[in-house]
Amino acid sequence: MIQTTLTKGEMLHELQDILNSFIHEFETIDKKEVNKVPFAGSWTAAQVAEHVNLSASGFADMMQGPTEDTNRPADAMVGQLRSMFGNMEIKMQSPDFVVPEDKQYDKGEKLKQLEDTKDQLFNAAATLDLDKTCTAFALPQMGYLTRRECVAFAAYHTKRHIHQLKKIKAALA
Image 1 (cartoon, helix red, strand yellow):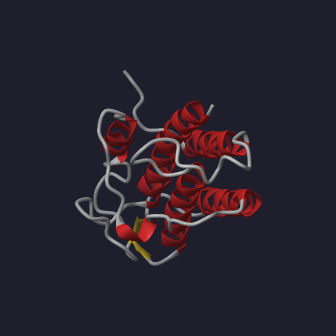
Image 2 (image 1 turned 30 degrees about the vertical axis):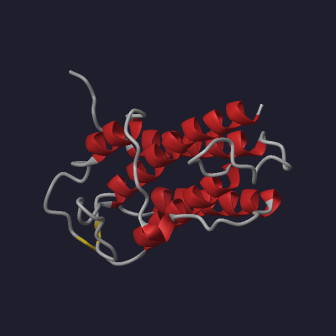
Image 3 (image 1 turned 45 degrees about the vertical axis):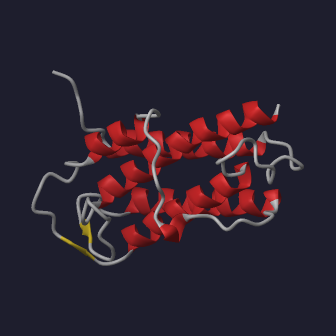
């Protein structure tokens, strides 16, 4: 039988690996290049970092907000999230509240924010009951997520943007 549900420890390990990989990928882009548009229609590397930070910090906040008992499998949407964010053939539209401003970002400041958000998200995932449903915010077309699904969303969404940073880096080279 194929295991589809990760243990909490496996989820934490995967989350940390993905967040660290994103930060590393951003770190390796020259400070003079982080605010350059690499190709038409693209965000800059710094805008991608800002977007990931806004999204991940939002999930960390949501996980620490109000919850209720879950009346469905707590990982019901994890496979859908993995599949959706793993499909690089589709272009996604970000909701306005996580669209980064078109401005010059300071690379060092962005790295610090990413590290802080990583710690906040990881600590929430490590210390809270992941099987509770977060009720502070319903995602469009998905509704309320469990904390377990919030962790999956943050991880797979960030993983998608690692791919985007690599494309940006290659275009800037």
